[in-house]
Every structure is written in C-alpha cells, then in structure tokens.
Image 1 (cartoon, rainbow over the protein chains, first blue to last red):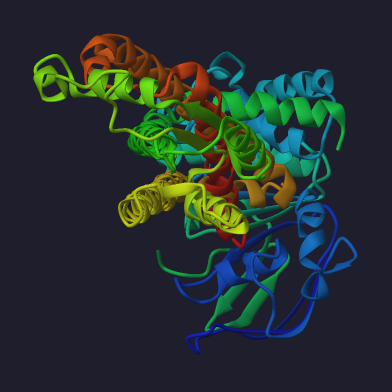
Image 2: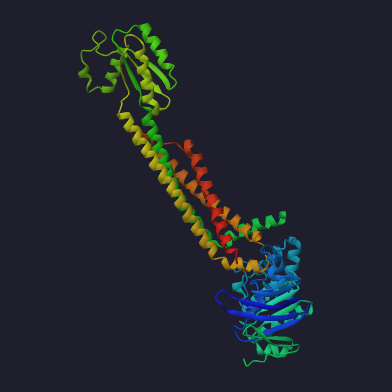
Length: 228
Length: 305
C-alpha cells in the first residue's frame, strides 16, 4: 500500500527533514504518526501525497512510484488519496456542498451522481442540514467534518490527516476521531499525525514515532509515549 | 473535455464573478477607467486626423494661362492635365469667372478695391483650378503640369502655383500631429494593458491558496485554468462593453451639442457613424484580450504549487 525505502528529504535550506526512513503500511491500517514538532511528521505525509519529492530513496503509494511521477500524472494519483489538515483548507467562497462536490467535479463525474454522493457523505459526517453554509458560517468541528467529507467523497484508498484535531476542543475532537474510525472500518487506510496523547492512548492503533528525521519506534498497539 | 465538464467550467466562471464581488468590481473598474481614457484620446486623434485631411484637401494647383491663349489650346491642355494620373479634377476658370470669384472671396467690405474692373477691363488671366486625389502628391503633379507647358514652342502657362513651401510646411505639421496622436494612443493602450493585467493579477494572487487546495484535491491544471479563463473573458467583455457604451453615447451627445458652434468655425467632428464601429471593435477587442491574457498569465504562475 504505502512503502518507503531509505527515504531522505533535504530541503533547499539544508534542513534534513527525513534521514533514511523505511516503513510499510498495509491496506486498511490506522497509523498514528507522533513525535516532537519539526521531527519530520509533516514531511513524511507530504511525501505520500506528492507535495514533496524525496531527495533519496523510493516511495510507492498504491503501486505508483511517487518520486518518479511525471507532473502531469500527479492529479490522478492524488484523487486516490484524501488529505485532511489542521486548518481544514476549504475553498472559502464555496458552500459546504460545493466544496465536497468540487472533488467529484475534478474527476468529471456526472452531475446526478455528484449530487447523490455528495449528499450521502454530508449525511455520513452529520451535516446534511448545513450543505448551503459557507465555511466561515461553520464551527471548526463542522469545517473539519466537511473537509473529511471532501477527502472521502471519491472513495480514496488512503487518507492522510495532518493534526486534524489540532484546532478543536476535546469533545469535538472525539467526534472527528469516531468519524475517522468509521471510515477506516469501511476499508480506508488512515495515516494521521497528532500531538493528542489522550486520543492515541485510548484508540490503541499502530504508532510510528519520528524524531530528528528517523523512525525511533513502531508499535502495533502503541501509546503516545511523550509527556504532552 | 466532456461537454458536461465544459458547462461546469462555464457555470463556475460565472459564479466566480459573483463570489469575488469586490475583486470583480476592481478589475472591471480598472478596465473601464483605462479604456475610457484610451477611447477619449482615440476619438481625439481620429478628429485631429480628420481635420488634417480636411485642411489638406483644400490645397489645389492654379495654372494661369498666357493672355493670348487660343480656345483650342485651352481645350487640349485641359484634356492633357486631366490625363495626369494624380489629377482628380480640372476646372477651367475664365477671366470673367476669375474676377467674380475674387469679388466673392474678398467680401462686401472690400468690394470698392475692385471698383472699375469689369468684362472689358479685366486684369486677370484665364486659369485652371486643379485638384489631386492625394494632397501629398501635389508638388509632384504640379511639376508634371509645368513639364506639359514646356513641351510646346511657346509656353502657354504664365505660372503654375500651389503654394510651394506653405503646402510642404502644412503637410509636415499635419503628419507630425498624426504621428503624435498615434504615439499617445499607442502608449495609452500599453499603459492600459499593464494597469488592467496588474489588477487582475492581484485579484488572482488573493486566490493563490484556493488554487493550491484545488491541486491537493487532484484537479488538473486544465481544470483549474478554465474557469479563470472564462472569468477573465467575462470581466474583459463586460468592462469594455460598459466603456464603449459610455464613450460612444457621450461622444454622440458631444457631436450633436457642438455641431452648431463648431460649424461656424468650419470644423466638422467625425460622426459616430464613421468611427463608432472602429472604436467599439478596438476597445472591445483590447478589453477581452487583456481580460483573458491577465488571468491566464497569473493562473499559470500559481499553478506551480
């Protein structure tokens, strides 16, 4: 599913974000990525959805060699990877419905199907009634639910979530986690970077800890392992 | 591209106009203002050009004949002059008509200066008044006519006059005025292009983040570019349409309001009928091209996210 072999990433300013990372994430896994700020978690995720290319080493996602991907092919690979951010990244001038539908318009789905599927995921994230609201009219938790709906609308095989609960209060965070668990249960691989000790320790999933660009711990039913 | 997808881009282009209300307003305003200034100078230049042509077309060649020239010679000379390719019109003016014209042109107040001259006592020679197709060729045509006189043993021409020197200066002035007009209009057109494309670039700069998000969702560059392209075209078309309507309506009012006053000074403004289409096509074309160009260039820049 996702495989990295001795992946190095050095940025233009000389920062070594990753220094030889090898990992295998199987289909349908739920993986927490933990570690201090600046350890390389974000770079790890950016490499998966081809925001960055590795300086050295190989990454394959769904059988695509990400490092060697022609720029023209990038959009097609991304359509099979849902991305969720701490700051939601919704299109500010589009309604909740339009934001989700956009991801389906991109794959040139017929309008009728877009409508049906968009309403379906809105239902799934529990925001059917807010379909006409603009992002600014929604709470943080609601915005993140719309972002999740957008990420899953095309049934991707992988979801990459970079601190999805980072801006949310504990109660809202648990709502989001239940949603992600539900999506994982339906067959989607989830890689989630987080600083939330309580969530990691309660959910008991695979935990990969990154420090200074290296994987220092990889446990099947791990805990957070840091004082938060 | 699927028809459905194209329709989607079209819808999206229209929606973006409304979604980015203030940005759209800023872009259209900058188009209207720049193109309006350009249009005013364009009309000014067209009028100056027209005025120059009017003045130029008044130049003519006068050929004065020897006093004893026979009617047969006069007829033959008239035919020969008319056969010169540059010449558009030859008119024979007998000495009697000449005196009449002189009286007319000097006006009633100076009538006493010509007192005593009549058909019996007429100091004027017979003459030809000659007009040419292109005023700029007048000295060339005059030389040809002079050469015509020199072919016969006795030169039948007393003199060939076309305001030598004066005419050349006049043409220098009118040509200079035309060129200055062209430079001003050209310069304004370029300035307008930069001003408008800068505004459009800034509106798109504000949407750089949006483009980045679209790419993350897996949109191809084409997919992102199309609505921007349509939006740019719509802004360009509506901006230049507003300008054209305002400008031509205003000009039409100006022409009708000033008709009488300027008519007294023998100045005739170019009518809307004559230049309306040219100005409209030019402004609309320029506006549309700039709208599309500005948005396409700027989106391309941010697609490398």
